[in-house]
Image (cartoon, rainbow, N blue to C red; front, side, top):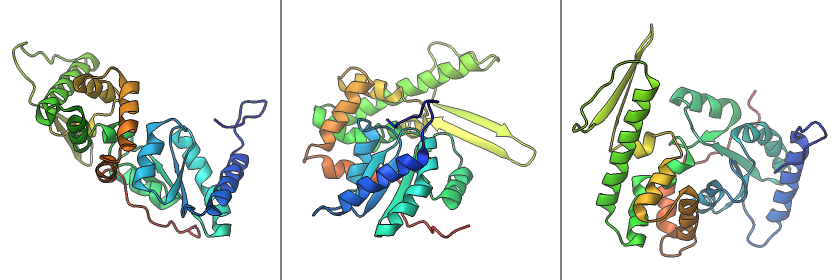
Length: 258
């Protein structure tokens, strides 16, 4: 994605200048954008298309991994401020705690999604409702099947990962999973059931599972299907609203902060 020197290293200042010059050209167009949004992924990633319909006034630029977003955003903000444009940045929340996401914005002005991955957003029940409608299948039946399968997979992963006896009869069905971790200061409790698992399950396999239950094969096929829906005038606005529920509202970050 980026030019690398003979040592295989990316020159962040060079890349920042290239992005800034691109943005300068964009602002001269009749339908110019009001600012830039750096995100993860590449030009073909679903991230770009999700953010484009949620923030139509911003030029969305995928720059690879979250570390690239973190390194590039300060310099790009500095350069774009010369032409009264502003640069925002969003990365996947992944496993960050609320305190860590707050600290990331306060120190670097970088936002995080409200769900772990962009895949959680495009597979959320709010989005799945429209997917099922377009496919002509039952939303409630499909959601139930997806949720049950994910709970079963999570239970299996816990059994394999933890060296303790977690036996359960084959005819029993898991209703919810409760995980408690205690420190000297506090206890942290996490309850996962079928109603929350699509929001919290931090594994991109959810796209494969959803794809199977809506009648298509594989996560790549699901990404392509989602792109078709984004470009479908019948669903574009509804999807934008559904996506926006899990993406933070953007505010200007004070460039003069120490």
